[in-house]
Amino acid sequence: MDHESLMLAIKLQFEDLDLCESSKKGKEREGEVLDADVALGACRHELEQMAEFASDHALCLSIAKAVDLDATLIAELQAEEEQAARDREFARRLSRDPRATPPATTTTEKQVKDVKDAISEKSKSMVARIVPEQSEDGQNQAESSHWGASRTHLDSEECIACTERFATSSLTRSPCSHHYCRECIINLVTSSLHEESLFPPRCCGINIPIETGLLLSPALLGQFQAKKLEFDTPNRTYCSDSSCSTFVPPAFIKGGVAHCPKCSQTTCVHCKEPSHEGVCSSDSASQQVLELAKQNGWQQCKACKRVVELNTGCYHITCLCRAQFCYVCGESWKTCKCPQWHEHRLLSRANAIVDRDNNPDAITERDRALLVERERRNLIENHECAHVFWEWRRGRHRCEECHDMLPTFIFECRQCHIMVCRRCRLNRL
Image (spheres, rainbow, N blue to C red):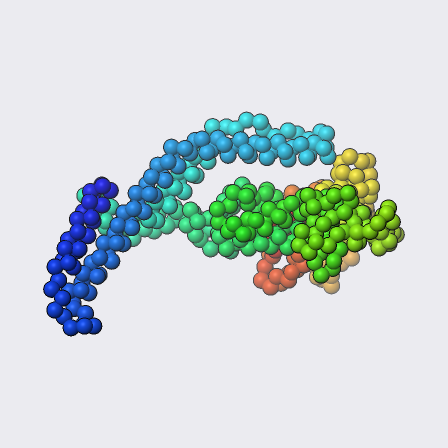
């Protein structure tokens, strides 16, 4: 039955109900409910539900048809946005490395087709969840167990974070093709607002386009945009009132004085202390920290002014603000001629890996020395590891990034042998 015929039938049944109710004689006693009244009320409720379902059915079909017609245009627009993002990333890489290889500048028909197919499948799955299966004569019927099992398999995906399966239409797909359920993507975004090492939210090193996330509330999107402004601002200024410490956006800074948007406290952007008259004197506390950093060989990020200490590994530093620089001179990475590692730190890391994987009492000094040398060479070859291949290790281990203790298992990179938790593997490295 088509939509217009169904709505007409429902309308006629509503008119019959109204006629029945108006023809009642009203001879029952006050407070008494007759069986006929109960039956009429149940019938009216069922008709209202049927009318609502029919309207939803028609709306879903209309949306699915519109999305299917516009899928090619949407795919082309998305491809253009992805190309623009690659161009911006290449510009940033080019500023650090003049020899960087440019990304592909064209979008293939296959890429557009893949996006179009994904849009079409998602719209179909959304309709399938609302529209029941119909037989050839148009009547609703229960689906077979075989078809139900196959449809569940086709229309569901595993959330990469919690490993539970959900309807594909209810998941957020990251650019690396991993899927996140609503709870996990909200948890990731919320965590990134408090841990800069997780910001911006990313998976497999690729940023997740949160701005277009339909699973996030307007309030959380607003918090994300505010935090993005904060983390994107170099040499940030925070309210000098320690009980407030609110970030002061550049728009609230005039003439070297920051006006807190929360408590209206004024702060000097040079010394970060309460605003004052005259020329700003040097910040003695910051100077003491920089002097201590100089004495200990620590380096300062030129982008966000953080002080960084290197314990093990090569001199390639990726700051929390995502700036990459040389630990020796502080210049942008690959723009200097400094050595890429120090032998002492290299051996320290090699020894730590060998002792972690072997019982020192069970191997001879000679065998241990060979293992350390093999690991030293491996670290030299993989000092800029992209962490592509991982293996699963049982047992109790500590994550080398967030330092959480994992009671059951951990992931180990097959190249550089760093051991991290699932969150750090997917969203922090």
